[in-house]
Length: 254
Image (cartoon, rainbow, N blue to C red; front, side, top):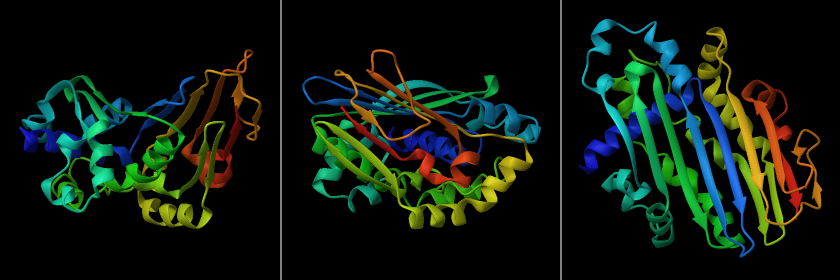
């Protein structure tokens, strides 16, 4: 059972590097907790690749899998990775949920990773350690075996979250891009991004933050603040982020 879920999860991960609609959502509660959702919609990518892959690939059992399920993030981690994680990282994985909705024949592939942080410190830890749990060397084998489908390196976009530096308190949410790490990320993903652009594929990126109390200050000029100041939305895409990664910087006081 665990190996089957791992296969599904890895198949989803290798599509992260192509056409992805990404949405981050943060729901801050009065008690200091925060519900976090990383949503990845790869349906448009599947529509594109269905037109270029062979009929033999479309007829494989893997391409005909249909899934609509939710499980603990820990359930999809390989045993070899579990042994490398700390006790706190294992607890983080156990308390994170992975929701999968997949029907490749109908061009549906969606993934949500959800977590409820107990407080500001817990949220900061989660954001700083999620990429370590998401990425592992076993993805290389999957990409090698599936190059006829996508031709991308599976680890690239998933690992991207580690180029942020966070400061999170009960009244602050600050996220600043580390330019050195971001440039390293671009170097690794250069071939992927060039291929996506050549195929006229864009990668929209939306960040939504909902607050129980009115927001006092937001540093990013692109951010849209709702009339009641309880909601902040930042909408961009990978092309704009590549040109100026600081457009993803957020300093919110609430």
